[in-house]
Image (cartoon, rainbow, N blue to C red; front, side, top):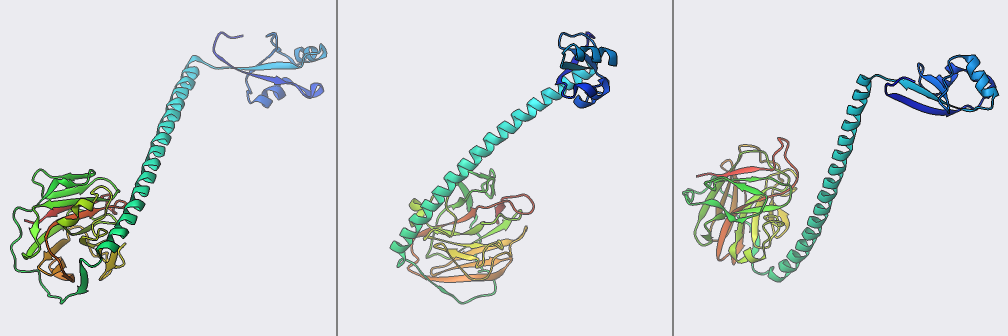
Length: 315
């Protein structure tokens, strides 16, 4: 045998009377391989094979000799295959952890929804809503110059700019980012936000009363689901874009695009929402007392341009 590396395939000869060396090679896919007996005696001719079979032999080896270059290539392929298997194993474990985390988040969401429903029933008399009169333009009121997003009032998967005027979502889970400072609901206050990217599915902009902050989870709740929050959703997901206490009212969502300016006006008895200078929805309330904060809610898959949402405060 050659001292070079060889690929060896053992074969048991079934049809002894018709066996030939080419047939044996063809049966194992080694057209150029050498044929050896079990004790490594080479069978060079058909006469050698016939004599071996007549002597009672039945098992042969087909050796396909390959070069060192081919051996190296095969070794490299084995290394790559092992690396691929290891990567697939790691991806499988990562996917398992992701699914486990999403399952945990879903359980938390279901619990929060149940808790919010209890709270809604307990506080349904605090705030009542009715459609108010519409005015065509935003209020002639100055924008609050001190308004900015505050890290201590933001969920864990949002990023803020250094000046706090920009918030960016980095994950599909529900997150809320609230602004500093808080304002008195008896004082007319108008704030404006601009979309720097398209938005993810559950993105909303609105306000929340500070009396409800202790019941708010910035990492799981959506702005507008909370009985103390009022928000507007601009994605086509919303069949009615104005959300409060988990209920939707008003026109269908889907009007917000990259560059849209969203205005929110809070007066002593109403919350109004504007899109690019035109009033889109207004609700009048009774017993709307206390301080409130402006905020943004994120959640859902990425938008068409691959973003979860980036929003700036207009100053």
